Amino acid sequence: MDRITRVRKKMQQASLDAVLFYKPENLFYLSGFTGTTGYVLITPSDKYFLTDFRYFSQVKEQAPEFELVPLDYAHPVRSRIEELTRGILGFEEEHMIVEMYDELKETYEGELQPMRRFIEELRMMKDEQELITMQKAQDIADETYMEILEIVSAGMTEEDLAQEIYLRMRRKGASRNSFETIVASGVRGALPHGVASGKVMQRGELVTIDFGCVYEGYCSDMTRTFALGRADDHQREIYNIVLEAQLAAMEVIKPGVSTQVVDKTARDIIAGYGYAENFGHGLGHAVGLEIHENPRFSPLCDVPLKVGMVMTNEPGIYIDDFGGVRIEDTVVVTEDGYRNLTHSPKELIEV
Image (cartoon, rainbow, N blue to C red; front, side, top):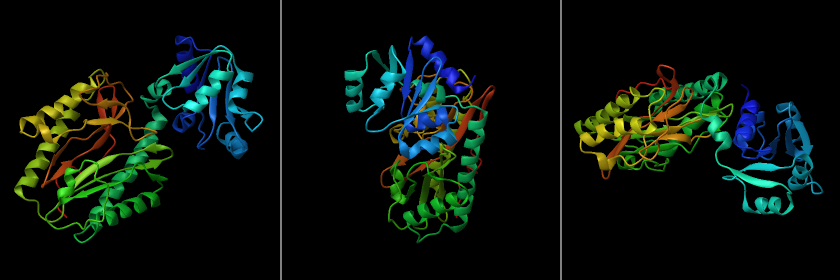
């Protein structure tokens, strides 16, 4: 079933006469359009792409199956919607600005119906082509990691390393980082989101790097922690606890298992070693066109896993005045378990 057919099926179930989308990731998902400004309007019989002069050629090239509806000062989106549809119009409540809602409410003769995560629910399960693209995005990150292990050294700054990661991913075909690269060395490793700073990395420190890239619209995400020089016993102990938790969580990932259960599996292991208070974030999240999607591996998220969901598994331990360890892979849920998209080694590497 293609994506537009799935949308129309959901429309029918929700008793909607038309649906309007404008979040860029959702426009790409539905049409292939990679620009920044536009609207997709879908009815039971038609599909329209509404945009202005800047994107006419791009829509004709990237979304040829959609009827192009020009927007301009004399024909703003609200007037075009009035011309194209009637009845109950669903809109993305999480993304529509108040000004646009007020304008539509004033001019649209039908009923406006907010939709929450309408397309995002469809995007949870990736199809075969999406998985091929995501594997390529992850391969770029994996190859980059193995290369930077050859060049990283004491005396480099965290920002130096982040720049090397970015440049190498771009040379391999990535369009950009999927998020701001985290490089947290030494005591800064206690910061789960410690983006790269001007700190000079020193021998004897653990270094956590969390990074990914965007390839043909899709994100990759991975984290590794390595040692500059020899790791001491405490560093090795913390690392092995995190690795044990990560591997245990992997083994329970399969269709039908609650995201809450996967999170608890890793969390219980870390708590059993006395570090419950040092693991304060969820175990992971879905990845796709956005770096953070739903569902989540979290104590607060109870969603059964389904085939095609792509999830991160990233336990960590963070200790003030010591540093931290996080290990993250990205996996796809399969019919009999999971497939790991991340292929970099996970044993503690000393460089």
